[in-house]
Image (tube, rainbow, N blue to C red; front, side, top):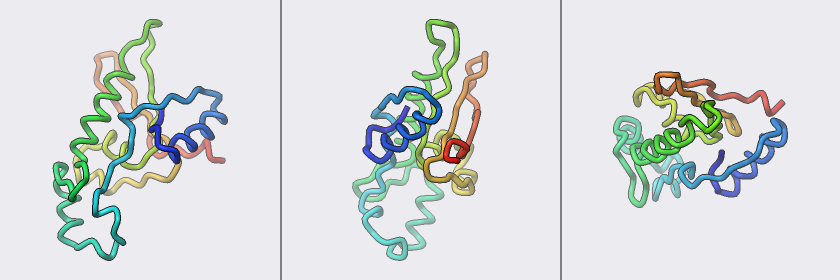
Length: 145
């Protein structure tokens, strides 16, 4: 599964070719929009803005969506994809984007910003028999070798 955005979809197709799996696009996986903050150079973003961004999951710079909004979208995706399929197996969606990986693996804002996630890496989320989701794989880059 991947975002329908061109860069993400192209990366997913390359990964899928190596793994011999199909590529499915899902709008819920569109990356985080940093709004006007994303149109500035890193040095132009004030320390106060970075502090607020990292401390408050509900913070959204002008014309942006918050990490909380992304968490809801990714949560809906995971709930749908991790449901038991008709064969009785549980799925493991593969997500290849930094923001979604951070939010999907988030156990708190402090942890979120201390996690390294490489470009074109994969994050896998599974679901235990009791329905509780778990982090099955994070920052996987073996497919790039």
